[in-house]
Image (cartoon, rainbow, N blue to C red; front, side, top):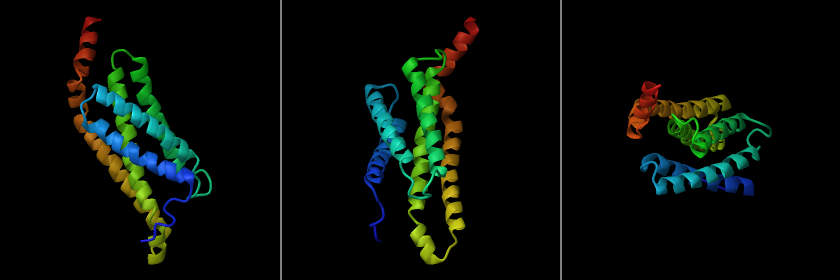
Length: 181
């Protein structure tokens, strides 16, 4: 396999390296215990690498030559990152800032997984063109692959959200505050 066109610019190289770190750090944040000093350090590193990933994503126009679908997903990814950081930094709203932080950061990381699948499939056009498969099939497969990853994210989020809230004492805090009013 020829990797000569895998990375075509310094921006692409920085984006690739930061993406790998975001993928690894985001996975660690998901699987390691929450609220510990290790979680906070890894979480900050994840946030910083995501800033690099998103900045370089907005600087990349190789695939379409103009603003494309991946730029729109970078907008969504930027929003999930910002919406995940604001509650934990401001500790607002006071009754559920941890739940908001966790929920948005979960989706930020799921977005990285979805982007990984998309980026992997985007690297296959040469294979598609040489095989005679129409580009529409390629783009449909990229969309389907990403949708499967995000669908699995939805499944695990819905399956585990109440357990995670209970683990962090969030259900009890919210219920206690509601009953005290």
